[in-house]
Image 1 (cartoon, rainbow, N blue to C red):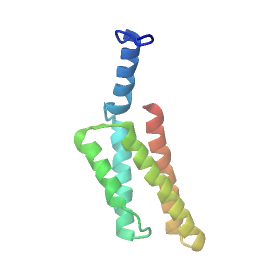
Image 2 (cartoon, rainbow, N blue to C red; image 1 turned 180 degrees about the vertical axis):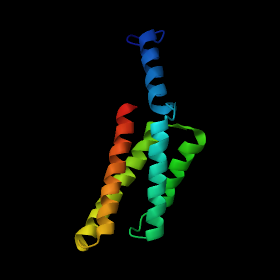
Image 3 (cartoon, helix red, strand yellow; image 1 turned 90 degrees about the vertical axis):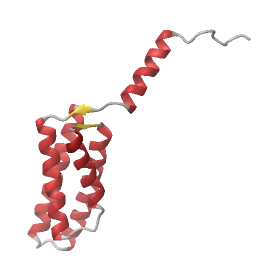
Image 4 (cartoon, rainbow, N blue to C red; image 1 turned 120 degrees about the vertical axis):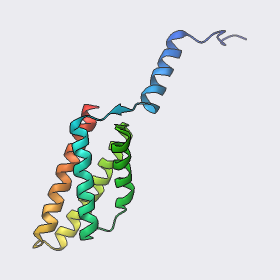
Length: 127
């Protein structure tokens, strides 16, 4: 039986363990800035629900944000989901604003979504 190692090389084991830990188990405590970003996003979602400008599933993302706040920790995947939500939301707000360019409220919501998206991207870059 040539080519079959009798034992696993230590370097391979360490690298495999590192990558599994890195991709599956990273949970970090929230900083004050990250908490602030989460609170701003939740406030924005609540405002969108009240105004009913965009028909999207806001509840899922609000639940993710609430989970991060309750646990006091996050995984990068959670912030990536919120970033994707804000990207989709920005696109829909821009389409709505292009249909109604006189609606300054839509313009304001679009700019706010972009600002929040940039804040979430800053959190991800700092992870």
